[in-house]
Amino acid sequence: MAPSARARQVMSAARTEPAAAHRLAVWYREGEEGLFQSQGLAFRWSLQAAEGGHVDAQYNTGVYCLTGVGVAVDCEAAATWFAKAAERGNRSAQYNLGVAFEQGTGTPQNYKLAAEWYQRAADQGSTEALVNLGTLYDYGMGVDQDHARAITLYRKAIEVDDHSAALFNLGLSYFKGTAVEMSVPMALSFYKRAAALGHARAQYRVGRAYMEGDGGYAKDIEHARKYIKASAAQGDDDAVALLHGWNACAHCGTAFAPKVCSGCITTRYCRYCDAKCQLAQWRARRTRIGRTTAEGAEGLVLPEEPQAVPVGRTDCNTLEAAKL
Image (cartoon, rainbow, N blue to C red):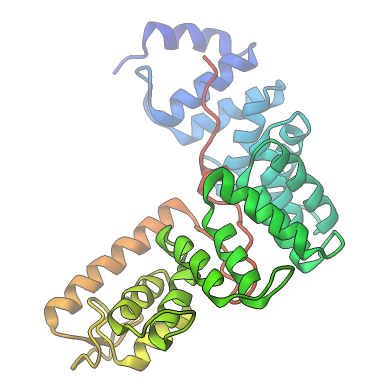
């Protein structure tokens, strides 16, 4: 495969023009325009464009340094590049810089600065920043504790993107009665919406409601098993323990499964209906493990507390595209 005429033209300009270097980095990352795919070359050209002042390349270079794609992991360098791009208005960089300050990743932990950068990213429409800023107000970290303000931010994130963590956090506010009138049915309505979007902790809470007949839900063990199993499959410890307590089949959720697997390390479960269920669950678990390694963490689980959204696929692994 030979580089296209367009690629050759950009390559000749890339050494002196940051925009061309950024475009070339994107093409190497994706293997486009007749170029072989190379994350190492993608990082090299992204770094050159970033040093030349290209804001999207500065953000992308931060992502490469944070994730270790094309270069060794360097959280301090990542925070530095995110800061450069954030100062120039890149929304994703502002969000990631807020996470860096909140978690103390590559920079000293500073909740006040985390809140400031989340606010700037939220002002540009980042739903993740809205949720994380809401959790800071819920905890009173870097800002004065204000549950009402947190709820406002969660509602805004839901309006923009029906964000699962915002739905869960809002449900938790109704469950606890913080800045709203306590209402278990309202809490469960938000939990159920979050569960439908794949939120593990919400799935567990809905499953428990069906199991115990809470919040106006009639007891329904089949529905309970469905939600608990979905939560356990994502690694929620309480859901895993509950399934184990039921002696449920790890694959289909049938209670009091007879087959015990003493060496079931891969799946974290011990009981199955039969060898067919056991094999199916092993395969499913291995597929999930591989996908998690490739795509990165989905979210931070804080049982029974408002949830923050860490650097993940939305703002970290989705790099800026070339501006053609």
